[in-house]
Length: 295
View 1: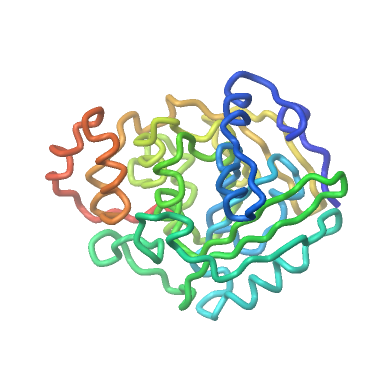
View 2: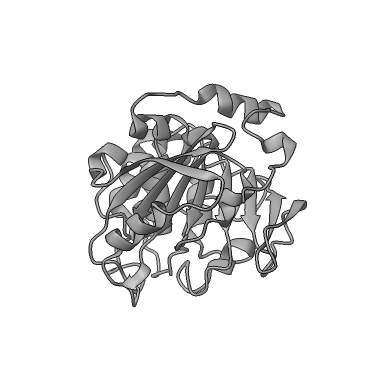
């Protein structure tokens, strides 16, 4: 059963100039893929998503990007994810399911699959889906609202860069929900402002829109830097926390050189767009020790 969203985040009600600006930036379309892309300003981003409906049950936004490079271990995940998307929880009705989405339709410039340069940046994961894919499911809520859910097999930061680098906004909501050994075996590093080696935080520093305004987590290793806005009980085993973020969250400067080392095919366009502001040309000449991706 879908839960009632906090009033200020409900898609039918806007609150605050920042959210209104995101809503105004959205563009609806009769084409499902274009409609999903047109609503990225108000999207939620869920790395290491597995097969978890909980962020959607909370009903904070109607547009989601789920990412995982091994949702079913080293098995072929396409059939399993298709089955999962075809069987939504109570309160959602599947309207259409779109498989075989070409990578060029998601990002015209980013290399596919969305993975870092494992040879120079970090260890290749023990389990990885052998056949990367992208799949879009469109649902209807009981009140008639449309829900768009894109599932991409890829690494979290690489996919984030591929989809959002050329967007005016980063995701509105970042879901980090007890992902086991996800995010490079140290997903909690995102919540530690003193930890420098989290590529996802560096990308948010690089992007003009900065860190997403909201983080959704399950209270496991809660980020003390981010105040709780609302605690949400889904069931006995699922209790989530919606937290507000702020742009002073470390690191202060984006390590563009580190991002370039790890994601050379993904940082090039970003750096071209922002090279003058960041002084990227000089930074890209720096050498960095290998760092584990915050995937």
